Image (cartoon, rainbow, N blue to C red; front, side, top):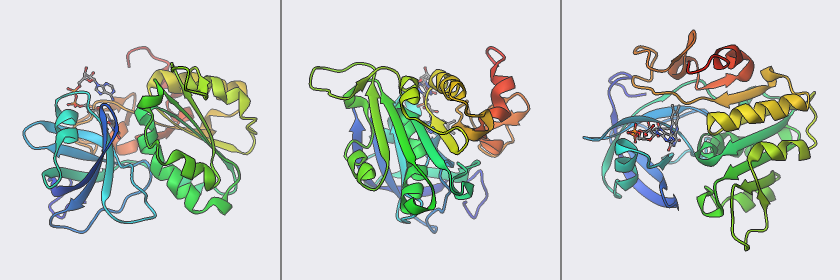
Amino acid sequence: MSESGPMVPAPFTVAGRRQETADTWTLELEPLAEEGLTFAPGQFTMLSAFGAGEVPISISGDPTAGGPLVHTVRAVGLATRAICDAPAGSVLGVRGPFGRPWPVGELGDVDVLVVAGGIGLAPLRPAILSLLARRDGHGRLLLLYGGRSPDQLLYAGELEGWRERGLELEVTVDSAGPQWLGHVGVVPRLIAHTGFDPESTIALLCGPEVMMRFTVTALAAGGLATDRVYVSMERNMQCGIGHCGHCQLGPTLLCRDGPVYAWSELESWLAIREL
Ligand SMILES: Cc1cc2nc3c(=O)[nH]c(=O)nc-3n(C[C@H](O)[C@H](O)[C@H](O)COP(=O)(O)OP(=O)(O)OC[C@H]3O[C@@H](n4cnc5c(N)ncnc54)[C@H](O)[C@@H]3O)c2cc1C
């Protein structure tokens, strides 16, 4: 957190950039003035490109490794485009980290089922890396990852390495050419084939809201209670510290109380259309 307070962005320089897909970049940021940030998996920063805007972006780096602040950003509008275009050596603004993290430090000896859709793998990457770093501390670790097409998959160069370190991995795409030998179809369809044990499993989900809803339904059909399912929610956010109210969902402010929630905390509010 900036010494000047949570509303003042700290300057970070772009130390490295890697293109993940046609519209998505992973940026490594180094602080110009202050110590680097420490964060917990699932937290986000308010990241700004000067003159373009400030947006919430999850931290996608390895919490066990130290080093630069890592963000994976999909260019969808003015601010995210400017952030993705920021050349090496340029300066971005960072506030945070903010938000309630994934409960990966408190899980104990359970199986962990991670379900990600598209850019949703970015907020889950720190949780996966943290769980892989203490692989012997829990039971099965599974990742079900869905993308629109093979060329839309994030961290393509890392997925096999995660598998070698003990992650059970299934990847599916909505559509693909004949060279794709993996699954085709939406990610919730993979749930039934995992053989997960509802008594010993915790699920971590991030992706488009519709994907998370169908995934929760598939998990519930397999007997998993909704207080064992954690999701990271997205809403329009501006202050990041629970003051402005833009990210309100029912009685909760996502930036302050989330973005990670047990589904059981939100399900009655998410049942109300357009809330
Ligand atoms: C807690 C949190 C964590 C987030 N983490 C990440 C992350 O790690 N990486 C990342 O790339 N994004 C992340 N986002 C989403 C990101 O904040 C938005 O994409 C960003 O605010 C868009 O701002 P903009 O000015 O570029 O686009 P805008 O001008 O605000 O929007 C441009 C267009 O894109 C649409 N749009 C806005 N957001 C999205 C979206 N998420 N997906 C698809 N279309 C969208 C808008 O409806 C509009 O049509 C996160 C959001 C939250 C709340």
